[in-house]
Length: 104
Image (cartoon, rainbow, N blue to C red; front, side, top):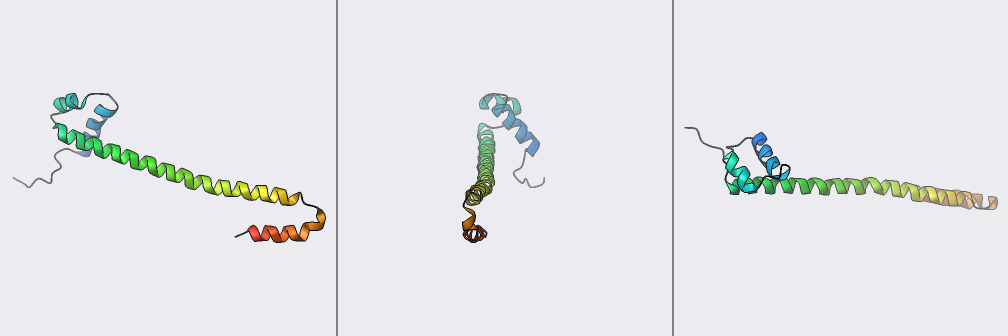
């Protein structure tokens, strides 16, 4: 017989098994009995799935923060420009130098 690589169950099977527990609210014991999978195996699959899900949430949160920061910076610069536009005409030269100092 050929050597086993430790992957008795395919990815599709694992995902379906995890879905039974997480989405269909089947107990771990019931899902294991119905599928012929050990409880330890099912718990390991669930841990991997929950860990992946947490990693995705963390990355989405990071991307959201990265997306918000340039918007906040832009809003701050627009506010500064609006304030500078309201200054007296005699201070136009100083406004121009202040605006150019804000540019990267």
